[in-house]
Image 1 (cartoon, rainbow over the protein chains, first blue to last red):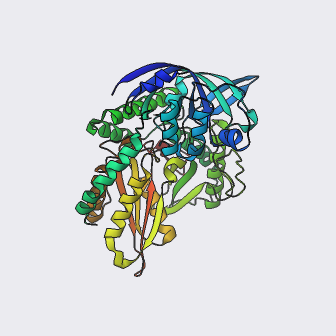
Image 2: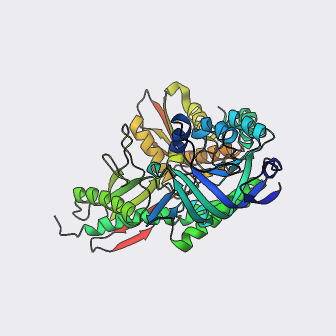
Image 3: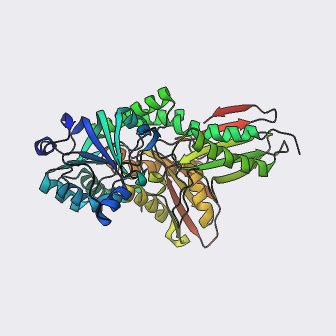
Length: 195
Length: 292
């Protein structure tokens, strides 16, 4: 298990060096997206007004307040990623996103896109919004404001993490491995429980 | 009827919601420390380090632990030694939950089930969820729990037949927990209901997650079943946040009720690692004592 400190936007080399189980922290650019952001992009064909190339995208619906023209953070946490699996291959393939940050992981088609284009899934600790919010230095922009709290958010972060590389660009998916290991252990557990 | 000032109940309902969201109960903190001490996998250990930092920041800044402020649940025990006004209690608790949301302020998550319109108040028709009970004391005892969706979405219920036996119940609990993987933000509390009716069994499972972590069922047979299921779940290796590890649950809590001779119901209510709850005891003199 190696530890990395990176600067975002990421290059292909940045993410190709990461292996499942490594721990990552980073500074720089982070986009926030959610279900509706991606429905708007992919199902309703709206082009993002900003380049997502090389950036990490976190699955979030942040609590923010607007003071004049400026958005301020209240609480930014992470939601379950599995719901948004179907958008991910295009996010990576078409827009060049290099990392998806979320909880509970994604599925096979996303893993394929990560292998093909060079991207990773970084697992954050769900429920730890207090920590995450502290690591966000600034809400730099909110695009598609009418979709708030599921708009497109541009954050600047510092020492963001710890994030576990749960899906890498070499075909490994820690969630699949944990599920397979649990399935392997299950008959023995059933036997011990007498079920 | 008495002339009790029910603004006290409303204020307590508001404070309870905010306290629950920001201040994790001591038994949950202790259980997380114990889980961390037992954990051998480096990935899982880094999850606990983030958890402890989160709790520290929430304590220091009096801020939300998790952004999912959930749906409010109030479990109320009304003492019959004082003429408490039940209607006032219900309306004031509702108002307090709404005020917590608007005045803190935090994101409201209640929504119309078909139209999906969110009033941003955490309440609405049918909410908060109330569990009312009665005691012989003269106090109003209110336990508040904000329930987030990551964990609640993994909850299950099934009506087995008597012929399926206890075996089916045990397997159902295990399969529910292992099947939900990292979704409910493990390691949390697994609340289990055995018996009752279809509605009562799910209420029992919810009651079970509201107990302090590791407080055993007073019936030794049920308590040993709790231990057995805990060990089985932790043997799965699902681990913290489903990334693999030695601890998948902090505790299994079981609540039971008598059931029909033809029924064998089971329900599982999953609770996440921020197993949030807060408690207030209100006395007839208007004093409020906060705890967990």
